[in-house]
Image (cartoon, rainbow, N blue to C red; front, side, top):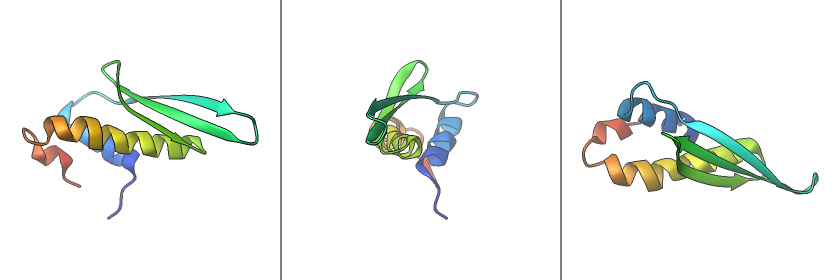
Length: 86
């Protein structure tokens, strides 16, 4: 079963930090016709992932992937491998 990166991130955070949710913040750059979106994902008021895309959704997917791959997995996979089950 294929899940979106945002759903997977929410699942991992729920398993690692019960009761907490990631917060998403969006910024838009460029003209109306050539817009680039940037998404920052926060956990405990700290940035855990940043992504860019041509839409808000693609920027959020990119940021969620980076949050899991580069922030959460390296720090918690040894202690809590069950949190990263799909």
